[in-house]
Length: 203
Length: 203
DNA sequence: CCAGGTTTCTTACTGCTGGTAACTTTCACC
DNA sequence: GGTGAAAGTTACCAGCAGTAAGAAACCTGG
Image (cartoon, rainbow over all chains, first blue to last red; front, top):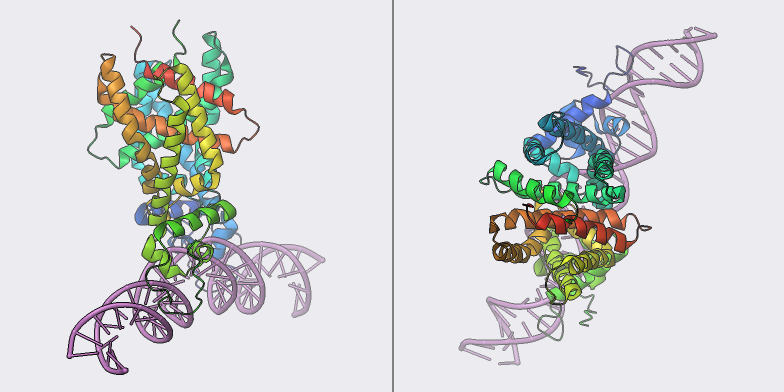
Protein backbone atom coordinates (compact mmCIF):
# COMPACT_ATOMS: atom_id res chain seq x y z
CA UNK A 1 0.00 0.00 0.00
CA UNK A 2 1.00 3.58 -0.63
CA UNK A 3 3.49 2.83 -3.36
CA UNK A 4 5.31 6.11 -3.62
CA UNK A 5 6.40 5.81 -7.22
CA UNK A 6 7.61 9.39 -7.81
CA UNK A 7 11.37 9.26 -8.21
CA UNK A 8 11.00 12.96 -8.83
CA UNK A 9 11.83 15.38 -6.01
CA UNK A 10 9.10 17.56 -4.65
CA UNK A 11 5.65 17.16 -3.23
CA UNK A 12 3.74 14.12 -4.56
CA UNK A 13 1.09 14.76 -7.15
CA UNK A 14 -1.83 13.38 -5.21
CA UNK A 15 -1.24 15.85 -2.44
CA UNK A 16 -1.35 14.91 1.25
CA UNK A 17 0.95 12.61 3.14
CA UNK A 18 1.62 9.31 1.41
CA UNK A 19 3.94 7.28 3.62
CA UNK A 20 2.95 6.74 7.24
CA UNK A 21 4.97 5.62 10.21
CA UNK A 22 3.72 2.06 10.16
CA UNK A 23 4.74 1.63 6.54
CA UNK A 24 8.32 2.46 7.53
CA UNK A 25 8.21 0.23 10.60
CA UNK A 26 6.90 -2.69 8.54
CA UNK A 27 9.74 -2.19 6.10
CA UNK A 28 12.22 -2.09 8.96
CA UNK A 29 10.97 -5.41 10.26
CA UNK A 30 11.30 -7.03 6.85
CA UNK A 31 14.83 -5.74 6.39
CA UNK A 32 15.92 -6.84 9.85
CA UNK A 33 14.43 -10.27 9.28
CA UNK A 34 16.29 -10.53 5.97
CA UNK A 35 19.64 -8.90 6.78
CA UNK A 36 19.91 -9.51 10.50
CA UNK A 37 20.28 -7.13 13.44
CA UNK A 38 22.99 -5.13 11.68
CA UNK A 39 20.59 -3.75 9.09
CA UNK A 40 21.17 -0.10 8.24
CA UNK A 41 18.68 2.74 8.10
CA UNK A 42 19.54 3.19 4.46
CA UNK A 43 18.40 -0.34 3.77
CA UNK A 44 15.20 0.36 5.67
CA UNK A 45 14.57 3.41 3.54
CA UNK A 46 15.13 1.44 0.33
CA UNK A 47 12.84 -1.34 1.50
CA UNK A 48 10.16 1.22 2.32
CA UNK A 49 10.58 2.76 -1.14
CA UNK A 50 11.54 6.14 0.26
CA UNK A 51 14.66 8.06 1.15
CA UNK A 52 16.48 8.44 4.42
CA UNK A 53 15.09 11.82 5.52
CA UNK A 54 11.60 10.32 5.38
CA UNK A 55 12.67 7.63 7.81
CA UNK A 56 14.10 10.25 10.13
CA UNK A 57 10.95 12.29 9.88
CA UNK A 58 8.59 9.40 10.58
CA UNK A 59 10.38 7.41 13.26
CA UNK A 60 13.53 9.33 14.19
CA UNK A 61 17.05 7.91 14.35
CA UNK A 62 18.35 4.47 15.14
CA UNK A 63 17.55 4.61 18.83
CA UNK A 64 13.97 5.67 18.23
CA UNK A 65 13.55 2.94 15.63
CA UNK A 66 14.71 0.34 18.11
CA UNK A 67 12.32 1.77 20.65
CA UNK A 68 9.36 1.71 18.27
CA UNK A 69 10.12 -1.86 17.24
CA UNK A 70 10.49 -2.81 20.89
CA UNK A 71 6.97 -1.57 21.47
CA UNK A 72 5.61 -3.68 18.62
CA UNK A 73 7.55 -6.75 19.67
CA UNK A 74 6.56 -6.52 23.30
CA UNK A 75 2.92 -6.20 22.30
CA UNK A 76 3.12 -9.39 20.28
CA UNK A 77 4.94 -11.24 23.01
CA UNK A 78 2.51 -10.14 25.65
CA UNK A 79 -0.31 -11.32 23.46
CA UNK A 80 1.35 -14.68 22.85
CA UNK A 81 2.02 -15.27 26.53
CA UNK A 82 -1.47 -14.20 27.53
CA UNK A 83 -2.95 -16.59 25.01
CA UNK A 84 -0.81 -19.33 26.51
CA UNK A 85 -2.38 -19.04 29.94
CA UNK A 86 -5.76 -18.12 28.43
CA UNK A 87 -7.21 -16.46 31.48
CA UNK A 88 -6.48 -19.47 33.60
CA UNK A 89 -5.35 -18.78 37.14
CA UNK A 90 -1.59 -18.91 37.51
CA UNK A 91 -0.26 -22.30 38.46
CA UNK A 92 2.77 -24.37 37.68
CA UNK A 93 1.36 -25.82 34.48
CA UNK A 94 0.16 -22.53 33.05
CA UNK A 95 3.44 -20.87 34.01
CA UNK A 96 5.30 -23.52 32.06
CA UNK A 97 3.12 -22.81 29.03
CA UNK A 98 3.82 -19.12 29.46
CA UNK A 99 7.57 -19.65 29.42
CA UNK A 100 7.23 -21.94 26.43
CA UNK A 101 5.18 -19.38 24.54
CA UNK A 102 7.78 -16.75 25.34
CA UNK A 103 10.57 -18.89 23.93
CA UNK A 104 8.65 -19.67 20.77
CA UNK A 105 7.74 -16.03 20.26
CA UNK A 106 11.38 -15.01 20.53
CA UNK A 107 12.35 -17.71 18.07
CA UNK A 108 9.69 -16.54 15.65
CA UNK A 109 10.97 -12.96 15.76
CA UNK A 110 14.55 -13.97 16.28
CA UNK A 111 16.34 -11.23 14.32
CA UNK A 112 13.96 -8.56 15.52
CA UNK A 113 14.49 -9.65 19.10
CA UNK A 114 18.25 -9.42 18.68
CA UNK A 115 17.94 -6.00 17.08
CA UNK A 116 15.76 -4.65 19.87
CA UNK A 117 17.70 -6.09 22.77
CA UNK A 118 20.99 -5.41 21.08
CA UNK A 119 23.12 -2.35 21.28
CA UNK A 120 21.97 1.16 20.73
CA UNK A 121 25.68 1.89 20.89
CA UNK A 122 25.37 5.10 22.86
CA UNK A 123 23.18 4.14 25.77
CA UNK A 124 23.00 0.39 25.55
CA UNK A 125 21.02 0.06 28.74
CA UNK A 126 18.11 1.97 27.30
CA UNK A 127 17.57 -0.48 24.49
CA UNK A 128 17.41 -3.48 26.71
CA UNK A 129 15.35 -1.75 29.36
CA UNK A 130 12.87 -0.36 26.86
CA UNK A 131 11.77 -3.85 25.90
CA UNK A 132 12.00 -5.08 29.46
CA UNK A 133 10.01 -2.28 31.02
CA UNK A 134 7.01 -2.87 28.80
CA UNK A 135 6.88 -6.39 30.18
CA UNK A 136 7.76 -5.60 33.77
CA UNK A 137 5.14 -2.92 34.27
CA UNK A 138 2.11 -5.23 33.88
CA UNK A 139 3.99 -8.11 35.45
CA UNK A 140 4.81 -6.06 38.53
CA UNK A 141 1.15 -5.23 38.99
CA UNK A 142 0.14 -8.86 38.75
CA UNK A 143 2.87 -9.87 41.14
CA UNK A 144 1.98 -7.23 43.70
CA UNK A 145 -1.63 -8.34 43.64
CA UNK A 146 -0.65 -11.97 43.93
CA UNK A 147 1.66 -11.31 46.85
CA UNK A 148 -0.92 -9.29 48.70
CA UNK A 149 -3.53 -11.99 48.21
CA UNK A 150 -1.14 -14.46 49.84
CA UNK A 151 -0.48 -12.24 52.80
CA UNK A 152 3.05 -11.32 51.72
CA UNK A 153 4.78 -7.99 51.27
CA UNK A 154 4.03 -6.72 47.73
CA UNK A 155 7.05 -4.43 47.80
CA UNK A 156 9.26 -7.01 46.14
CA UNK A 157 7.14 -6.99 42.99
CA UNK A 158 9.15 -4.46 41.03
CA UNK A 159 12.57 -6.00 41.56
CA UNK A 160 11.18 -9.48 41.05
CA UNK A 161 9.56 -8.62 37.76
CA UNK A 162 12.82 -7.23 36.40
CA UNK A 163 14.57 -10.34 37.61
CA UNK A 164 12.06 -12.61 35.92
CA UNK A 165 12.13 -10.71 32.65
CA UNK A 166 15.94 -10.76 32.69
CA UNK A 167 15.84 -14.47 33.26
CA UNK A 168 13.48 -14.97 30.33
CA UNK A 169 15.54 -12.77 28.03
CA UNK A 170 18.80 -14.55 28.81
CA UNK A 171 17.22 -17.97 28.49
CA UNK A 172 15.78 -16.91 25.16
CA UNK A 173 19.11 -15.76 23.79
CA UNK A 174 20.72 -18.93 25.04
CA UNK A 175 18.03 -21.18 23.69
CA UNK A 176 17.90 -19.75 20.18
CA UNK A 177 21.61 -20.49 19.83
CA UNK A 178 21.03 -24.09 20.92
CA UNK A 179 18.58 -25.35 18.35
CA UNK A 180 18.86 -28.97 19.38
CA UNK A 181 17.49 -28.31 22.84
CA UNK A 182 13.82 -29.25 23.29
CA UNK A 183 11.72 -26.22 24.06
CA UNK A 184 9.42 -28.11 26.41
CA UNK A 185 12.30 -29.25 28.54
CA UNK A 186 13.78 -25.79 28.92
CA UNK A 187 10.38 -24.23 29.58
CA UNK A 188 9.65 -26.82 32.23
CA UNK A 189 13.00 -26.36 33.96
CA UNK A 190 12.75 -22.59 34.03
CA UNK A 191 9.15 -22.53 35.14
CA UNK A 192 10.12 -24.83 38.00
CA UNK A 193 12.76 -22.37 39.14
CA UNK A 194 10.37 -19.46 38.83
CA UNK A 195 7.41 -21.13 40.42
CA UNK A 196 9.32 -22.20 43.49
CA UNK A 197 10.90 -18.81 43.80
CA UNK A 198 7.57 -17.06 43.66
CA UNK A 199 6.09 -19.12 46.47
CA UNK A 200 7.95 -17.12 49.06
CA UNK A 201 9.78 -18.56 52.05
CA UNK A 202 8.64 -21.90 53.44
CA UNK A 203 7.61 -21.89 57.01
CA UNK B 1 54.80 2.04 31.12
CA UNK B 2 56.16 1.48 27.65
CA UNK B 3 55.63 5.04 26.52
CA UNK B 4 56.04 4.69 22.80
CA UNK B 5 57.16 8.22 22.07
CA UNK B 6 58.33 7.76 18.46
CA UNK B 7 55.92 9.66 16.28
CA UNK B 8 58.22 8.59 13.47
CA UNK B 9 57.19 5.64 11.30
CA UNK B 10 59.30 2.55 11.31
CA UNK B 11 60.67 0.14 13.84
CA UNK B 12 61.32 1.63 17.28
CA UNK B 13 64.92 2.48 18.11
CA UNK B 14 65.27 0.16 21.06
CA UNK B 15 64.33 -2.80 18.92
CA UNK B 16 61.89 -5.45 20.05
CA UNK B 17 58.21 -5.17 20.65
CA UNK B 18 57.17 -2.25 22.82
CA UNK B 19 53.40 -2.33 23.26
CA UNK B 20 51.77 -5.48 24.54
CA UNK B 21 48.17 -6.60 24.49
CA UNK B 22 47.48 -5.67 28.09
CA UNK B 23 48.67 -2.13 27.52
CA UNK B 24 46.02 -1.73 24.82
CA UNK B 25 43.33 -3.37 26.92
CA UNK B 26 44.12 -1.08 29.86
CA UNK B 27 43.82 1.91 27.56
CA UNK B 28 40.52 0.60 26.25
CA UNK B 29 39.12 0.37 29.77
CA UNK B 30 40.19 3.92 30.56
CA UNK B 31 38.62 5.28 27.39
CA UNK B 32 35.37 3.41 27.92
CA UNK B 33 35.21 4.63 31.49
CA UNK B 34 35.75 8.20 30.30
CA UNK B 35 33.72 8.32 27.08
CA UNK B 36 31.09 5.67 27.75
CA UNK B 37 30.18 2.49 25.90
CA UNK B 38 30.25 4.24 22.52
CA UNK B 39 34.00 4.73 22.61
CA UNK B 40 35.71 4.18 19.25
CA UNK B 41 38.74 2.07 18.46
CA UNK B 42 40.46 5.22 17.25
CA UNK B 43 40.08 6.72 20.72
CA UNK B 44 41.45 3.53 22.23
CA UNK B 45 44.49 3.78 19.97
CA UNK B 46 45.08 7.40 20.95
CA UNK B 47 44.74 6.60 24.63
CA UNK B 48 47.24 3.78 24.25
CA UNK B 49 49.64 6.14 22.47
CA UNK B 50 49.65 4.05 19.32
CA UNK B 51 47.83 3.90 16.00
CA UNK B 52 44.90 1.81 14.91
CA UNK B 53 46.73 -1.00 13.13
CA UNK B 54 48.51 -1.76 16.40
CA UNK B 55 45.18 -2.22 18.11
CA UNK B 56 44.06 -4.55 15.35
CA UNK B 57 47.27 -6.50 15.60
CA UNK B 58 47.19 -6.89 19.37
CA UNK B 59 43.51 -7.50 20.12
CA UNK B 60 41.66 -7.67 16.81
CA UNK B 61 38.53 -5.75 15.88
CA UNK B 62 35.63 -4.46 17.92
CA UNK B 63 34.10 -7.85 18.61
CA UNK B 64 37.37 -9.30 19.84
CA UNK B 65 37.95 -6.27 22.04
CA UNK B 66 34.56 -6.73 23.66
CA UNK B 67 35.34 -10.37 24.17
CA UNK B 68 38.72 -9.68 25.76
CA UNK B 69 37.23 -7.07 28.06
CA UNK B 70 34.41 -9.46 28.94
CA UNK B 71 37.01 -11.94 30.07
CA UNK B 72 38.68 -9.38 32.33
CA UNK B 73 35.38 -8.14 33.72
CA UNK B 74 34.03 -11.59 34.46
CA UNK B 75 37.24 -12.46 36.27
CA UNK B 76 36.88 -9.45 38.53
CA UNK B 77 33.21 -10.10 39.16
CA UNK B 78 33.80 -13.73 39.97
CA UNK B 79 36.49 -12.70 42.40
CA UNK B 80 34.24 -10.12 44.03
CA UNK B 81 31.35 -12.53 44.44
CA UNK B 82 33.62 -15.30 45.74
CA UNK B 83 35.05 -12.92 48.29
CA UNK B 84 31.52 -12.08 49.36
CA UNK B 85 30.68 -15.61 50.37
CA UNK B 86 34.26 -16.25 51.50
CA UNK B 87 34.18 -20.01 51.32
CA UNK B 88 31.11 -20.17 53.48
CA UNK B 89 28.54 -22.78 52.58
CA UNK B 90 25.71 -21.41 50.49
CA UNK B 91 22.76 -20.18 52.50
CA UNK B 92 20.27 -17.39 52.31
CA UNK B 93 22.50 -14.84 54.01
CA UNK B 94 25.59 -15.57 51.94
CA UNK B 95 23.52 -15.59 48.77
CA UNK B 96 22.26 -12.14 49.63
CA UNK B 97 25.84 -10.96 50.07
CA UNK B 98 26.72 -12.52 46.73
CA UNK B 99 23.96 -10.65 44.94
CA UNK B 100 24.95 -7.44 46.70
CA UNK B 101 28.59 -7.88 45.69
CA UNK B 102 27.50 -8.48 42.12
CA UNK B 103 25.50 -5.26 42.04
CA UNK B 104 28.34 -3.23 43.51
CA UNK B 105 30.84 -4.73 41.10
CA UNK B 106 28.67 -3.78 38.15
CA UNK B 107 28.27 -0.26 39.51
CA UNK B 108 32.02 0.04 39.93
CA UNK B 109 32.65 -0.97 36.31
CA UNK B 110 29.46 0.58 35.03
CA UNK B 111 30.58 1.78 31.60
CA UNK B 112 32.67 -1.30 30.98
CA UNK B 113 29.73 -3.51 31.87
CA UNK B 114 27.52 -1.65 29.42
CA UNK B 115 30.17 -1.90 26.71
CA UNK B 116 30.60 -5.63 27.19
CA UNK B 117 26.94 -6.56 27.48
CA UNK B 118 25.98 -4.04 24.82
CA UNK B 119 25.77 -4.53 21.12
CA UNK B 120 28.43 -6.01 18.94
CA UNK B 121 26.12 -4.80 16.19
CA UNK B 122 26.55 -7.84 13.96
CA UNK B 123 25.91 -10.72 16.28
CA UNK B 124 24.53 -9.12 19.39
CA UNK B 125 23.83 -12.38 21.10
CA UNK B 126 27.49 -13.29 21.15
CA UNK B 127 28.47 -10.28 23.19
CA UNK B 128 25.95 -10.89 25.90
CA UNK B 129 26.52 -14.63 25.97
CA UNK B 130 30.30 -14.28 26.11
CA UNK B 131 30.11 -12.54 29.47
CA UNK B 132 27.30 -14.78 30.65
CA UNK B 133 28.95 -18.05 29.73
CA UNK B 134 32.02 -17.33 31.77
CA UNK B 135 29.75 -17.04 34.79
CA UNK B 136 27.38 -19.84 33.97
CA UNK B 137 30.02 -22.49 33.41
CA UNK B 138 31.30 -22.55 37.01
CA UNK B 139 27.84 -21.81 38.35
CA UNK B 140 26.34 -24.76 36.50
CA UNK B 141 28.92 -27.06 38.05
CA UNK B 142 28.17 -25.80 41.54
CA UNK B 143 24.44 -26.10 40.94
CA UNK B 144 24.68 -29.63 39.58
CA UNK B 145 26.69 -30.72 42.61
CA UNK B 146 24.25 -29.00 44.98
CA UNK B 147 21.24 -30.59 43.34
CA UNK B 148 22.77 -34.04 43.42
CA UNK B 149 23.63 -33.68 47.09
CA UNK B 150 19.99 -32.91 47.78
CA UNK B 151 18.73 -35.90 45.89
CA UNK B 152 17.40 -33.90 42.95
CA UNK B 153 17.94 -34.15 39.23
CA UNK B 154 21.11 -32.18 38.32
CA UNK B 155 20.03 -31.85 34.71
CA UNK B 156 18.40 -28.50 35.32
CA UNK B 157 21.73 -26.92 36.28
CA UNK B 158 22.63 -25.53 32.87
CA UNK B 159 19.32 -23.82 32.15
CA UNK B 160 19.05 -22.58 35.71
CA UNK B 161 22.48 -21.00 35.68
CA UNK B 162 21.68 -19.07 32.51
CA UNK B 163 18.42 -17.98 34.07
CA UNK B 164 20.14 -16.80 37.23
CA UNK B 165 22.85 -14.94 35.36
CA UNK B 166 20.25 -13.29 33.16
CA UNK B 167 18.34 -12.26 36.24
CA UNK B 168 21.46 -10.75 37.77
CA UNK B 169 22.37 -8.90 34.57
CA UNK B 170 18.94 -7.39 34.14
CA UNK B 171 18.70 -6.41 37.79
CA UNK B 172 22.12 -4.81 37.49
CA UNK B 173 21.16 -2.74 34.46
CA UNK B 174 17.95 -1.73 36.15
CA UNK B 175 19.60 -0.88 39.44
CA UNK B 176 22.38 1.29 38.03
CA UNK B 177 19.74 3.46 36.41
CA UNK B 178 17.93 3.84 39.72
CA UNK B 179 20.57 5.36 41.97
CA UNK B 180 18.18 6.15 44.78
CA UNK B 181 17.37 2.50 45.40
CA UNK B 182 19.17 0.94 48.37
CA UNK B 183 21.47 -1.84 47.26
CA UNK B 184 20.81 -3.93 50.34
CA UNK B 185 17.09 -3.92 49.75
CA UNK B 186 17.37 -5.01 46.12
CA UNK B 187 19.96 -7.65 46.98
CA UNK B 188 17.75 -9.02 49.70
CA UNK B 189 14.67 -9.15 47.50
CA UNK B 190 16.43 -10.85 44.63
CA UNK B 191 18.25 -13.34 46.83
CA UNK B 192 14.90 -14.27 48.35
CA UNK B 193 13.49 -15.03 44.92
CA UNK B 194 16.56 -17.03 43.98
CA UNK B 195 16.90 -18.91 47.22
CA UNK B 196 13.33 -20.08 47.23
CA UNK B 197 13.54 -21.05 43.60
CA UNK B 198 16.65 -23.11 44.15
CA UNK B 199 15.09 -25.17 46.94
CA UNK B 200 13.15 -27.23 44.45
CA UNK B 201 9.52 -28.26 44.77
CA UNK B 202 7.97 -28.45 48.22
CA UNK B 203 6.56 -31.78 49.10
C1' DC C 1 81.02 -3.51 6.04
C1' DC C 2 77.20 -3.65 3.41
C1' DA C 3 73.07 -5.62 0.86
C1' DG C 4 68.84 -7.67 1.44
C1' DG C 5 65.31 -9.41 4.26
C1' DT C 6 62.63 -8.99 8.61
C1' DT C 7 60.41 -6.62 12.27
C1' DT C 8 57.67 -2.88 13.87
C1' DC C 9 55.21 0.88 13.31
C1' DT C 10 52.84 4.92 10.64
C1' DT C 11 50.54 7.15 6.85
C1' DA C 12 46.91 7.21 4.06
C1' DC C 13 43.29 5.25 2.22
C1' DT C 14 38.42 2.72 1.21
C1' DG C 15 33.70 1.86 2.13
C1' DC C 16 29.87 2.44 4.78
C1' DT C 17 26.69 4.54 8.02
C1' DG C 18 24.10 7.90 10.80
C1' DG C 19 22.47 12.28 10.30
C1' DT C 20 21.43 16.89 8.05
C1' DA C 21 21.23 21.08 4.98
C1' DA C 22 19.51 22.83 0.91
C1' DC C 23 16.83 22.59 -3.01
C1' DT C 24 12.56 21.20 -5.87
C1' DT C 25 8.06 20.44 -6.90
C1' DT C 26 3.21 20.57 -5.96
C1' DC C 27 -0.85 22.09 -3.36
C1' DA C 28 -3.99 25.40 -1.10
C1' DC C 29 -5.51 29.69 -0.20
C1' DC C 30 -6.55 34.59 -1.09
C1' DG D 1 -1.96 34.27 -10.62
C1' DG D 2 1.19 34.83 -6.84
C1' DT D 3 2.84 33.35 -2.29
C1' DG D 4 3.77 30.40 1.46
C1' DA D 5 3.39 25.87 3.41
C1' DA D 6 3.83 20.82 2.64
C1' DA D 7 6.25 16.74 1.15
C1' DG D 8 10.09 14.86 -1.02
C1' DT D 9 14.72 14.21 -3.03
C1' DT D 10 19.59 15.17 -3.88
C1' DA D 11 23.79 15.78 -2.19
C1' DC D 12 26.50 16.27 1.23
C1' DC D 13 29.39 15.89 5.98
C1' DA D 14 31.58 13.66 9.82
C1' DG D 15 33.02 9.64 12.02
C1' DC D 16 34.21 4.88 12.29
C1' DA D 17 35.78 -0.07 11.28
C1' DG D 18 39.13 -2.11 8.86
C1' DT D 19 43.25 -2.51 5.52
C1' DA D 20 47.00 -1.81 2.07
C1' DA D 21 51.28 0.11 1.30
C1' DG D 22 55.34 2.31 2.73
C1' DA D 23 59.22 3.82 5.96
C1' DA D 24 62.66 3.36 9.46
C1' DA D 25 65.47 0.57 12.28
C1' DC D 26 67.37 -3.92 13.27
C1' DC D 27 69.59 -8.42 11.93
C1' DT D 28 72.12 -11.78 9.24
C1' DG D 29 75.11 -13.81 5.67
C1' DG D 30 78.72 -13.03 2.78
